[in-house]
Length: 381
Image: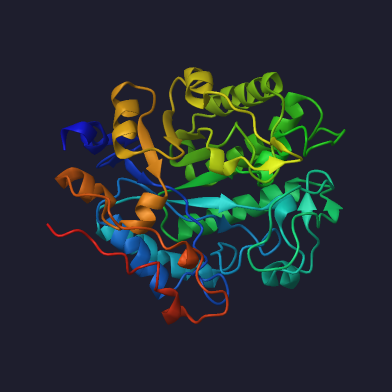
């Protein structure tokens, strides 16, 4: 398929050679029943997609029991989870692909009544005790607004990131991605509307950048800088994030420039997407601007990847023009387990998503989680 040929070229990522630039984005699917431990249906899901993906980023993987909301999202805080992930990483490697674990903490949009959060015995932590407006929880009543504690010592959370990275390495992951987007913990520290601290973790751009940069250093300590990446969404919006345009550019420009100095493998810059920008108090919450044009020039050595509603043809154009080195796809990988192979052989993307099954059934056993997860058909070749 000539129009997407640029996506099918191999690419060097640190010491890894990826077979194509059709990457699988982190996609929360809520199938690790019943206790956040990856299971056999998760194994089948990743194995299907590893047959053609150049790089897979796991669904958001929780670094601790504290800091959760989504039911049955997988974790990386105990040995049972490590063992479950090890089966998946082995299967992905056997299919010729690579897999990074996306390390995730929800911060202020955690829920005090989420099962794992309750089991932790700890309150919901955030940079500042400011509730996120708008939105709703997936399986519990009410909406964001349950922040009960400002974290006094953020190094406790950095310790959890580092421990999760240690577990990820034991589980056989090729690297880790810091989840710095979509209004979760790292993003909350960066944004001046969610971080009102007056200590060394807040206030100035340098101080607000500190948590994310220290988290990257912790991950590098475990994996080395060429096996660490970060995902950022500077346009904000989702989970009640977003600063004025000038402050946004200054903040993310500083953060990206400092993270670049650490020698990390890649930045994934999520471009503005309407669907991720809620209307709050009658106005769009996010800050629209051209993400790649604004921030990619700051990145001199790391690979620049992007995400956010790309069609295959558009993605190929971005790669061919040098605006990005690779593109992450989301929904297309959910509905087409052979996405990259379809692009290679010119097969249509004709599987329609079933949004009712996107996040599974909360109380259903493992076998009943298959529908809308591992039963999307491959094309005929």
